[in-house]
Image (cartoon, rainbow, N blue to C red):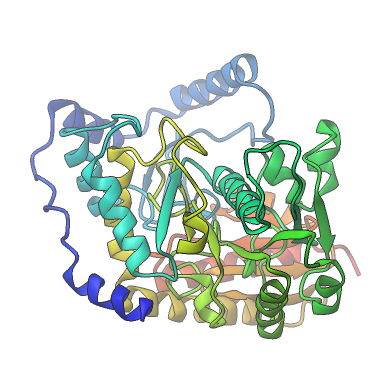
Length: 456
């Protein structure tokens, strides 16, 4: 019945007005700067050197960045550094730039909203936030949406919602600090759920956690894609929620098995626990379905979203069923910047573009072309163990560390990143990547993997 109501609402939902075509003088100036000719080689080298030096002096050093590249412009699936060198971007800002760089639809929505209203805080109603929430709810399992600013914040929200739900379900006063209820959170090997202290507790890699111990208590780890392992730790009276990525991203571009997700749904129902799908990386078209869970026919109780939702602007969201929404009250959670008009109006355009069935079908076709092309390009290379993934979330499993491959690819004008234990080449290009760009990527990557592989 609820699904039928959602379908009817989808057909009746009002759309935001078309963005105004006029641009402010500042917007015109920025656009002109973005398309300006690259500086002379000597000036570009000096600029790169200065920016890298200033970054080292003024920015906290938590990232390992190449010292010879400063990106200044992007268009479609291409990035350009200060020297004017072109790169094929098969990383898309870690699966964020779903429509590529400088998409005209994205820019028009951003500019139009920037001329109207940017921020009010969540003390007041705004139109774009409601319009985005309607789109997310009408096109998913969910009844409500909560907005935040990133994927890790979305998972933090889901943790809080799940723990309060468990307290209410236990029949206690959730605000009674002396009362206890199920509170354990289960996650899986190779998972990544974020770097803030709650989400960090759920994340697998110990090197992310050990410098900051103790992390949030109440976490239990099970083996990914192993239902017996999950059944051993999901317990009625103990477990509040189970967090899982339908397709692991940083963990190695590994899809869940059908029986695993179906089994988790059953285990959670039996234990009275909530099932939370982390679709920060695999959601919103990345797998060729609007949502990753649609590949399995298994619905969660909550779902975290972020990376591609606003096409490069910071946003996160938790989608949740009404039974969970019912336990949350004003003051239980919040955010100053979350869901502001600028980001939400832009996200509406991103959503409408990706949700088009023809667009999603193109992602399926491109994903198949990418995986087949990579298999062909690496055929006979004994160091390539597997090419896997769904849609345009693809991993090349190596038997050696992938860092040298990433470096050689970058030198050849191809941007890819690592995953897994550092032995997977991860490809998460813009969903708008062309077939010709996919073919070029496969050719370059096959070559540099052969060059970087250990000598036989």
